[in-house]
Length: 228
Image (cartoon, rainbow, N blue to C red):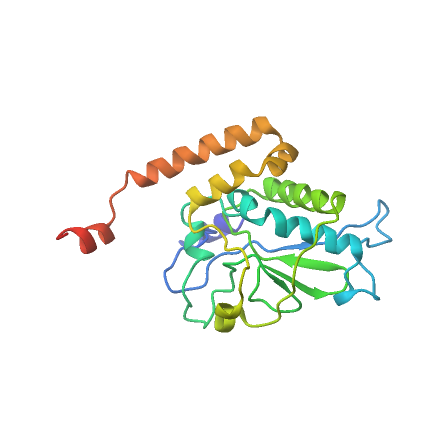
């Protein structure tokens, strides 16, 4: 709808993850909670727990943290996606996108934030993600976390853009699509939950995209290696 309205006014709308160098990209943040069938009880809410997140909510979050690197192939599925989540500071002073697998309270500089009781926000996905696959991956990772009582790990409340160098041991998100595909391909639990047949076809399709990209010669290569 957005694209159609833009076209009527002679404009072009894009949800490309990082369409303009130096500016903030297009994210697709997901706010996550689990409710009973009639919508009257939030299984993630517990006022007596840290940040109001219940034990089930923490375990679900633990599953997201556990599978985050493998999920990147789903949440950030294009070559351009990694210009957003691994970007330098933009003109706004921040990228508002993560580059490490960390979580926090109401702080927008981490991969996951807990803005209030009973829910959390996954800030990893971008505008190129397939919304159906995104939801499937979140559910698959979260259910695995609940089944195995996964620990989300230490909570960090620092500004990751200003003080991220102080964090030791936090997993880094993939630097490019190839790394993400490799992480997804070795995450057997996530692939099994999404369906091995789908996972195999998805990796094959995305590897074709990566190989096509690698056959492209850029101006950067000419500018930096022509006289090697």
